[in-house]
Image (cartoon, rainbow, N blue to C red; front, side, top):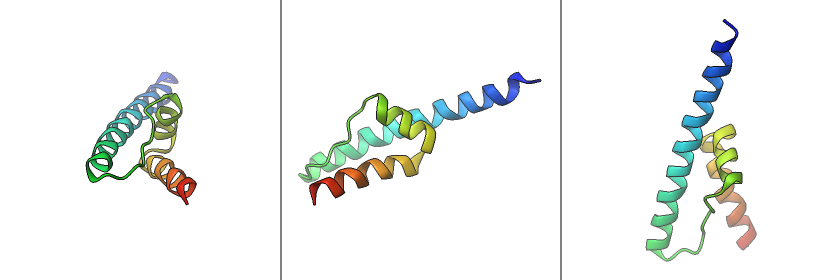
Length: 70
């Protein structure tokens, strides 16, 4: 019975991370199409951030890059 919460957390983490990485990929493509130089890298840090924090984590990554440009 103790395996259930660990498995549930792991599956939830992986789903959030994969969805987050897909979102980063498509937002990067859209921004490149629009000519906006704002790209979040597809790497381990963005994978962990999107996996742990979900969509707000992806928004945070873009927010950090936008703040860096200012």
